[in-house]
Length: 142
View 1: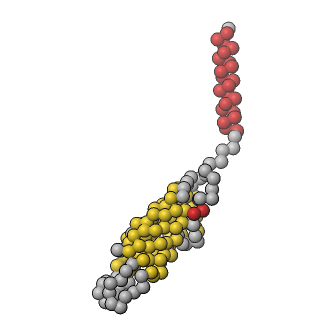
View 2 (view 1 turned 180 degrees about the vertical axis):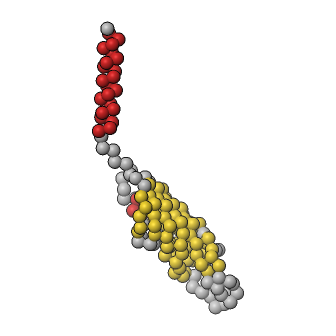
View 3 (view 1 turned 90 degrees about the horizontal axis):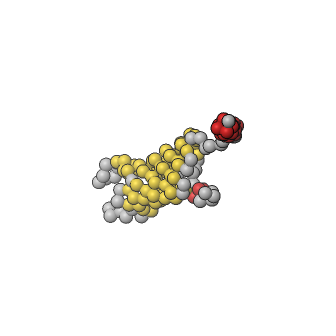
């Protein structure tokens, strides 16, 4: 008789656990696709024998948990010494496109910039690599 009571107590706890589990409201962050004009990401990197500093501009992004994938425009400042005559400015504004991945406050980016045709070079697309931070995630508490 003692075993039958113990089985009933165990079954009651199990039943109570199932009722509590299925009646609680769990709010998980679901993956979502969104559009943004600015994401608060600053990136520094290297492309075509020079550096760049860019900020994520208008984009389409996919976020889930602490990760974010961004495909969009990259308003940038490019830093490159010109050895031709006449010399171009060391710092030039530029607009690129690229893919950015960020996790929490870190970001890695693969930008693509177009170098216009000159008298000595044909116009070509150049792929770079950059690393940066997501400023708006620094304000969030872990």
